Image 1 (cartoon, rainbow, N blue to C red):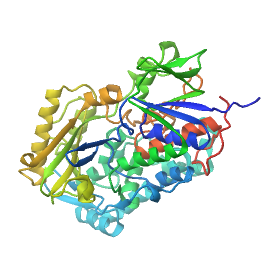
Image 2: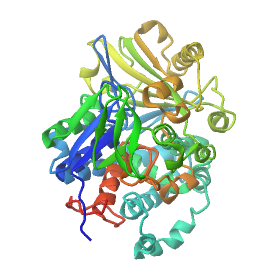
Image 3: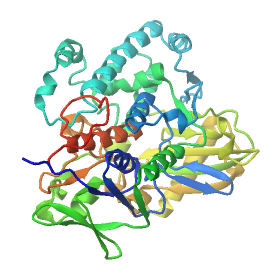
Image 4: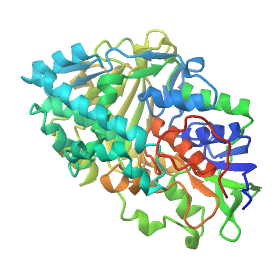
Length: 511
């Protein structure tokens, strides 16, 4: 049978997944057009410029550098030619409820001393725990993250079978369960458990396999691209333009056009239509399925989502601060006293805690270009329950969290020193990104919503319709969305391997 290679492709949404997919297709000779409802690329990885401040509006941790390097290499590019990366030291600072603090450096000698000081035998426990995390990370990278799970026999690879006994130790356990096998000190438990938030879940619910996140912190380290995280988006767009990708901003889509259960184009919000051989949606998957397709063509209808767990939403604060903030590092975590209760409020009782755990980023620590001289650029993230939140309630909560931050950070006049302030909350995630339940991250990484159990990146009911982004495989985060782009490409070129592509092959998949 003759194989029909796509000549043209439409991508809905210019988030990092959409941009990354567009570049891979364009490199293979496909004419790609991206339609984005907002006026800038990046989606959640956006840019806000106010009064001389340059705020990254979303992701602020540059992790898994080898994933970025691999992606750029597929395009014949090098990360160093586009991003000026700095390894942060310390990687981050943690302040506990009793006002004590530690710093995580991502350097073995320093971090072992820190853990040993808090728990006798803590250094050795850290060695063992991080070794296990690295083993899981290596297994995941080779056999799960780059896997579309369209060839079940690949899960019988000798590496996976060999890993059986070791993986049995974490099977059925949560991150919290696993960590408590190694650490009885609550502060160390908190340090190792908090990354679950960035997976859109709780350490009391997340599968223990996600302990692999600790390998990133303690072995690979935390990086920062000078100029801010948005330089990643600018790099992808720059490469895309060189490859011939067409971008239409301020051009939302309100319908995927189908014919005989086959995607043939889109209808834009202005009523005009555009046609292509394939359609790839980087828009929120719930929105794509329930709003852009008729019910009989929905692979994931509303009843599907009613049984799923949304990740947390968040209150985001972009603050310009007068003067210096020496008490803050580049990345800062402030932990609430009621650790478990804080997570239960987010995921179970759906309440905004009065004294929540906070994440604070001060990129001006590393990068003088993101704030005017004599000022600090501060980004505050307060995770909270998915769902609506009125503007009045948003502002009241934000004021309370700023007051709390001023107290626990040792900067009592913090509020008085704010010269620029912009808030972003659950309703904004819904309005700007069509986010399901106003979630900041997407579908939570519970066991039943991870790996082969996560929504597939191809429609079961509409031919030539594909998906990329945090709600599909492999999941949440910038590196995951880059991998997601490669997974769509592998679908199109018929590649069923479980690892990363060594090269970018020509498209050969049957449409």
